[in-house]
Image 1 (cartoon, rainbow, N blue to C red):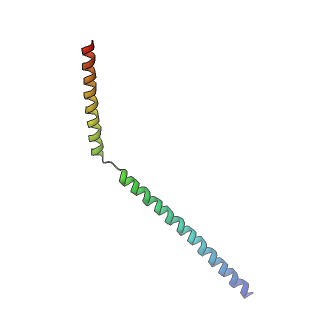
Image 2: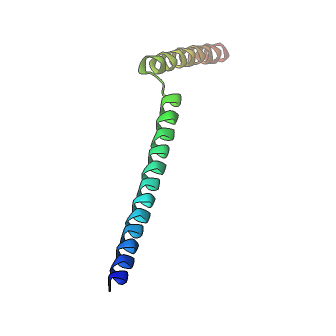
Image 3: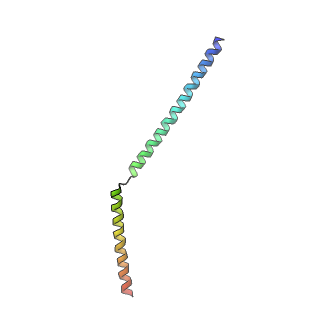
Length: 77
């Protein structure tokens, strides 16, 4: 009778350890994935000022192109 109780207790402890180990591995993997995501976000992040500056440069170039096209159309008319 005592042997069966000891066997059951060992089985319960081993099962609890296995479940704890799997849970710990999943948490570690999730932590690794979150860290990788944070690194990707930090590497690809563009500050608002830099983005606004790039957009305004592009806009000024587009205005220059529009003006040149308008002048070409006026010459041909």
